[in-house]
Each structure stands twice: as structure tokens, then as C-alpha cells.
Amino acid sequence: NSGVLSITVTQRKPVLRFQTSEYGFYCDSDGFLLPLQPNFSTDVPIVDGNIPLDLTDCVKGRPEDPADAQWLDNVLALAKHINSSSIWKDRIAQINSNEKGELTIVPKDGNEIFLFGHPEEIESKFEKMQIYYERIVAEKGEDAYDKVDLRYRKQIVCTNSEQKKKK
Image (cartoon, rainbow, N blue to C red):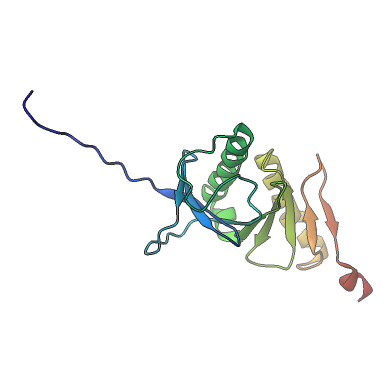
């Protein structure tokens, strides 16, 4: 009863940003969602598009829906994998999500996009991306393909748009 009040303040550090056409928010390494601040910006990977989380622009905390929380944890694992790799951290420009939570990865160089699918089997899919760059690009040359599909087990499916096929 000394009359001393002790308060501990912990600042959360954003590791990922989600951006939709309507709103955006940050996420820390624990999956705690934070609203964007008008006078603050940080250099973290951005996932944009149709984020399949049931959220509003004043979101704060972990998603309550178990499926939302699992998707968020999987995307965090993806971001952690990218950030821990000097190769992928420097090579990946953008991550897009569709309404089903399937991801597309856009590299900084080249015209191809990588159809990553659901954020699962992350290491295996990045191994396929590495094989694509080491073997397929080495043989066919850069910009030989428009899409590289990593969603199938033990396969890399490369395709071109109809316009590119006509050339």
C-alpha cells in the first residue's frame, strides 16, 4: 500500500501490412491486427487485394473466427519465410490475395507472376520457385512465361497468355 502505480507499455512492431480498396491495417508477429496510423508508415511486406478476413477499418486484435486466424497465421509464416531469406526478401515485390485467400506473388524483376495458392506448404513452393529460376529461366530465358503455377504437388506449371502465344 505504498501508493505507487506501475504501468508497463509494450509497443507492437508491424511485420506485415494488409491493404484492400477500402481499408488497410498492420499485423504484428503474433497476428495482432493494428489499424493504420495517418502519420506512421513502415517498410513491411504488403498483401493487397481481396483479403479474406471478416474485418472493419477499426480492427484491433486477433481475428475471432478460427478460419480467419489460421489464414492470418499462414500468411505470417509466409512473410517470415520471405523476410528471413536474403534471396526472396530482395526478389519479391508484391503479394496479392483473392477472395478465397489464394495468393499470387509478383517478383521485382521479370514479367511472370507466381500462383502460390493458399499459404500452405510454403517451403515446398519456394523450393519450386528456386527451381524455376535456376533451371527453367536458365534454359528458356527470362520472360519466357507469364504465369508460374506452384499449387500442384511436385510440379511447376508454366503458361503464357494468349497474346504472347500468338507472337
